[in-house]
Length: 116
Image 1 (cartoon, rainbow, N blue to C red):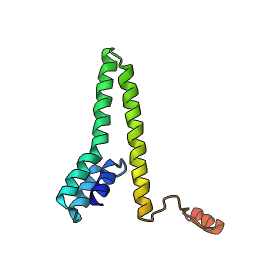
Image 2: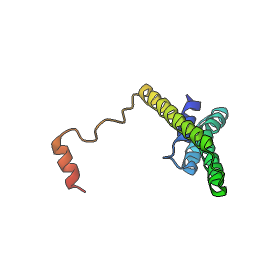
Image 3: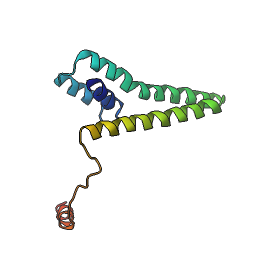
Image 4: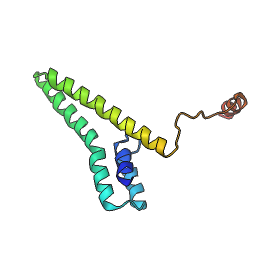
């Protein structure tokens, strides 16, 4: 579970890398799961940045790589959907429902909006 948690946290664009490092330093995550989760969790982002840089360079040089752009797009879509499915399965195992409404009744909704 530690490797999966590290993978999901490292692949999340929401948590800044430096904050995650601080949290992991405070937690008792074993070293090997930390290294494996960090490696595999950052791999999709690193690959996307490298591919974007390469394709940008090719576009600026006028070399255009239609096949490379299509392959990169397919790989990006596949990795995003895979990470999303893994995250959904993990959240379901943890009994966490992100689609739960914030307010239960109309009165709660009015009270919440009037206090802002």
